[in-house]
Image (cartoon, rainbow, N blue to C red; front, top):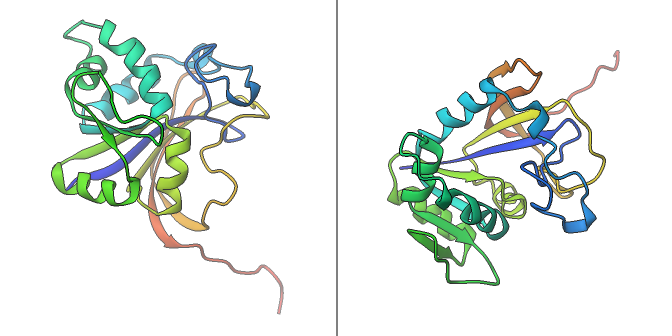
Length: 204
């Protein structure tokens, strides 16, 4: 049975919107598209390639799907593992507004919660989510994510869509591994660890 894994770029204040370039996602008049680019380096690239190497299928929100579909089919280098994975593997799109998708091996996922359970049964390794801020809120709400791979960039943005939005359910996470790139990006891998625990430093 597959695991559902999430790979995402976030700012230090938790924003994940439009990391790749200007115009990528201007929702809410977000003005900082491309904030990842100045800090992305060889170390970060190796992490991304290592993640994509584990993919059996992808689950994407419609906005991220459209961004990917406008770019990756144009990358035809057979040695580009990311392009090869995205262009050849099944892609499932969670969308309330569209049901037809033209990129190779793309499929509509009309119902996320039950759909994820079915996808996990269908594949042996990983169903991966990249980007997809809106979709992630549903996955987080229903505790469907098996592993978070978070690349935290040393910038603050102040506005934008966040990985953990308002209404996120309180839960504990276990840090599996952590490393830092040459440009100061912190790569952290977390897995769910049950309910949130609390305590007190008060002296009795």
